Image (cartoon, rainbow, N blue to C red):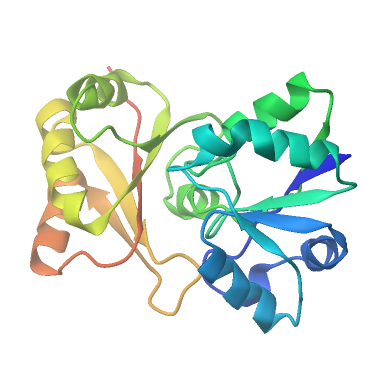
Length: 223
């Protein structure tokens, strides 16, 4: 019995690996964050496989039964909508539960949005802090203050309708002259990376309506 986390393309379907395609074909069934999106991916690669829903809204409720099903199977694959499962997507709880039951767990290397955004930012990346999505309310200001004080480069995800608010708060606690980059639609047709001070980035996305999924990279605090 085995659970494999399989990264799926975040944009260009050519980013999928040959190994990922093989395992999607060979596994007993697939756990998917959004069965509709996963079925589109499977259809593109002519894969006919049963897909079962496993997402943030049901993972606590179905966790026990899911682990029991994996125990009764030879090989099960977990995918998210795009990117690597458990990185700001469902997966952590299942991995922990499987390890507790001595179920083998592996994760394939593959697409994840923050790595290319960090690399092309031009900011130091030998050490960095990955913050995922900021809390919407409780703990949000505390998290941003930690980013402001961090000497390492910080990386976080943001949605288009919260981007300007986040840039405003980063300017408030990091200062308008702190440098950073904002990447959007990575590996897609309209991929873009804007670089500059936080003030310049806010100005850019005030003039250009934020669209797509965003990765923010913020330089570390320096004395």
